Length: 541
Image 1 (cartoon, rainbow, N blue to C red):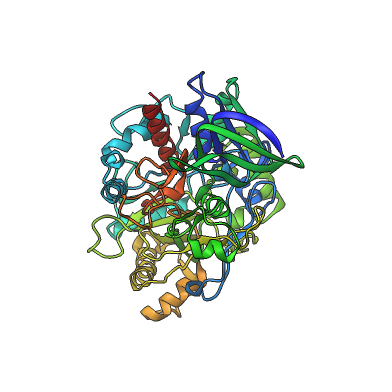
Image 2: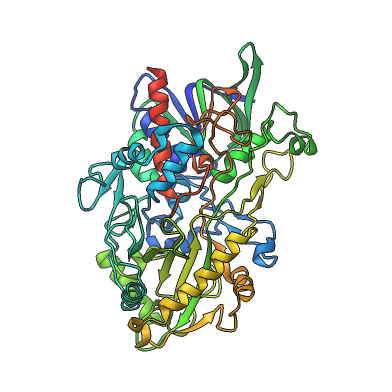
């Protein structure tokens, strides 16, 4: 085994959180940092063209190619479960939507951790710090930061009509989803720069890589953490990993920062002997610390994809159905970086309540001027739009668990969608609300006709079954190394993101969220990394 050397900090994973950490920590020139990434450089052209997510997901060049275990809530189906395997991580293959969630999300984290650092008014300055918002700086937004936020460079009549219909059913039009209460509808803001994807690697890693105190090793897969027992208890001393046909180890004098994501981070902890003792023993892994919460508490937003045929209006289905149409779309992007090739996967958003007993919006819509059978399939030949709706606060919980004791093994991902009565009721209510919006006067001129899941599903029992048939992930896994109070047996890290019972080790990524945010999860993950860098600086000084 070859030594990669000694560093002050080792960061595992160059996804959104890892890129932020690498940037912030290397701002101190006295600190040496190693960043280890299993994927390659983000130099694949389809990463940077927004519509290129179609070619990055389920592509071994950029995706881990995970599949979920068959899910009872999805009527026994297994799903593709994309996670970025490239510099920038999932920010290189995701939907580019800039979304913080709701103030109540962070206030709840503060309550669950007994740490006011996580309250909305405390995290808002961190969101603003890294932000470069197209409208400039104000009470809610920052300017001049690394994380570019822009308006989308397109609009669609069918989406405008959906927004009008939503307003007619009581969902107001708003111009900003990121002020702490996102109820309403509008076009999503996106992480793009002049029509090109702006991932975390461009935003944070490029400038950090020019500093002499950062080393980046790509194509290297972590096998386990180097753990030792001493007078102070269990301590993480570094990392063992493979890459370039060699076996390596690297030592961390100060801390190892695990930023491999909600799937990767618990998997690495379990392979290292930190996790539920019975699971580790089942796979002949020596138990370094029995931590039952590692890999548990998996939360994700299930999107119920409802699709409607329309007439008398253009959609991407028909626009791209001919070679002439495709050439026109390509030429528009080539000349202006706008049009369908600049599209985020979803363009129009709406946040609403499934019932009036909800304190804040608990549903999120992603509305698209297109339809297809499933991800990766061609678009339908007829004009149509899709209104996907997800429960923002699911009560169902899944888990991530090792499938074997080998470092190259694939983790087993169990989602347990629709496992609770509450989630099933919200799913049924969300289908009915979507039908109510589509039946509003603003959409009547386009004669919308539901074909997914179909009007044959009417009773609550039918609607729950339909949700299982058309529901799929929206790629927001969180919670598998959740933070919590000292007396929370299932908490993996404390409120400063330090792994409980282990010195020199933090987890910094979406896995630390105790509860999922009310919206897309990429920018909240970025904020978590900003918070971690702040904690590390404070402790070092």
